[in-house]
Image (cartoon, rainbow, N blue to C red; front, side, top):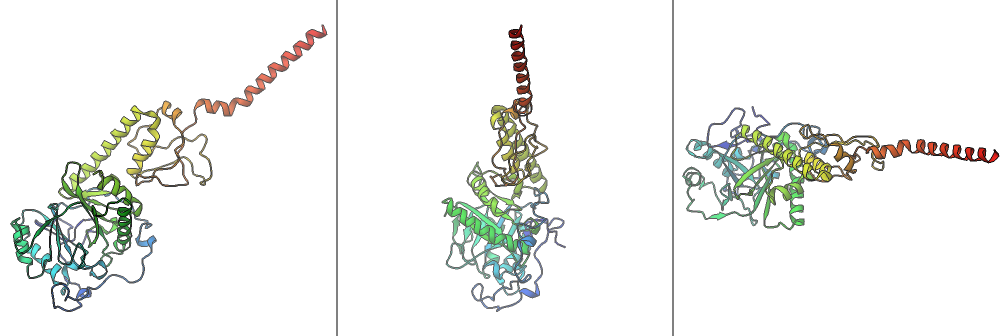
Length: 426
């Protein structure tokens, strides 16, 4: 039985670990079309899955389960990722690698399974969108972290391709290897496998393309829908292959990604090479325990940076803490009123994370009301809640004791006038 929290429906190059699904048996719903041809002559794949439109409340970014489970350590260990470009998500059956009449993905999956014991690297196979006449045509094969592409693989060449490229780690002589540049984003949009991915995936793809255009990153960042990668409940699921700060190419997996997170992933992960820890599931080349340890190290590093910043610049302590806690998926405020209401008068700043220290008295005196609450994605987000500073003793004295002080002054003045009149009468 498939464990939905695991990361891979197809993984080869070593023994499958407990709970991992290998390649699946042929489904009845996918056995339609003609057997003629390798690509263009093959039949249209069954869309599979349930019909009708899926509401966002049930399957999309508003579903109750979103963000409820820890993400780090949910990617099974693997060392190489092979993407076969093949048709579109709208025609993929739930197990596209096992469709009887879609021979190319089925034969490639079978060949990988047969040679898994001979491969030096644990290899994962995923289907991505392919369309003739575009950058990724039907039959193209992308291999990461090698950052290479082979064009137009057919079902006649599968065994030879697997032998030369994936077993012997040499070039496939009939084909010409191309070097890939830039960053590659793959988003699970496999609706026939799980409706959550079918709802979230297309929305994220549109948002990524819009943000790539607005950031002027055309030709530097490629976005493509892909088949099931494991962990339906973590939708939207995003895999990003790009160079780190030291130039190493690896694949980072993100879960619970929403359209509001796309700008963050572009600006911080792809452009700056930083990991967004509250969305991070793991990465290629790390075992599950190592992924969890790395996530803990990232949080500790962030805590240390915030403490150092607070020490060096207390005046910016609040803003820095709110930003960091937004990245860590925790935000809280002391004001619960409507958007037009002012900040509470005597509330104290609520700590956003148990890992952060309480503010000192000096910070509280200097701290001003934060204009906008940072969301869990680490970017500004308008909200009815506001985070406010505790009023200083001087502000409290002015507010509470002004009338009393005036009364005392008036009483003294009255006594002075009365005494003056008394002396004149004598």
